[in-house]
Image (tube, helix red, strand yellow):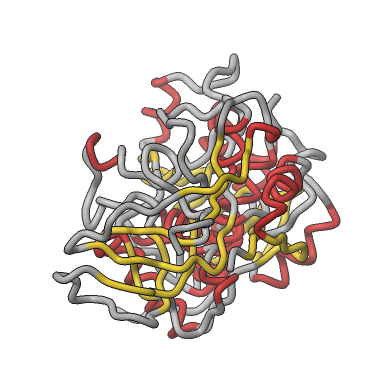
Length: 370
């Protein structure tokens, strides 16, 4: 296992050619560690952003890349009590965020940034950095849940609970947004490329919001995706390329033109003004993406945010506790992640990065590892 084990590492920030498949060795297993044979992993926009040197969070070169993985437990440390050999597990995005809000120190435990990631044949993770995989999903589906799905869950159920009477606006057709749509429909008891980040977050939000019974309005840049969004539960779909001032049109779709209870904003600087145009007084804008960069002449002023009396909340994934609650919900509602039709093998990870960069996908891009 240690001899000849391979992992993909980023050796520079000049593009995908700096992704290198290298032989590596595992460190010794500590008392609370779990050895995992990785079965599948999935990509997020941050992965390509690191390779293109556009990721705004500190990361280091020379370690295995990727954050979202599914695998089988091979061995456990002497003090591990939650897992045993043969268990199917998923990696948490921020390894040390067990519950609640993260500290700056906890944020430094994100996989594939300052800690070894998942695009490796075997990995060692702390017990608290893993969760059990939902029984209703397979390896590929499970590998998509760590980032996009937990982000969508956090936006819908983190600081407030999505209710069947809520109106949710979701931007895009990617990982977070499509999950969010699915969850909202089943009632709950008691020039980097702008569309990239949207596509990876959007699928989660769409699925989850739909499963919770909420009314979901979606935006897209392509008429080709309208029917798919409606099939997943969107009541209306707006093409923002055809209507750049889509906020007004979206607001008119809500009862009494009051606006949306929660908006998944994927563009940041480029979309926040339109999100403000259609948020309800006292509503939430979940600021998730940075598609439009961090600066724009069209960024709303503090006064404009104040006048809308809304909460603008930045979200960076979520906690292990939220991940576990989400997995229980996924099993209860039989939610299936939306996967891109093209699946890549381990040796062709570079091609998967390029596929994401070229925006050729709908849903999450998966890579088979073992």
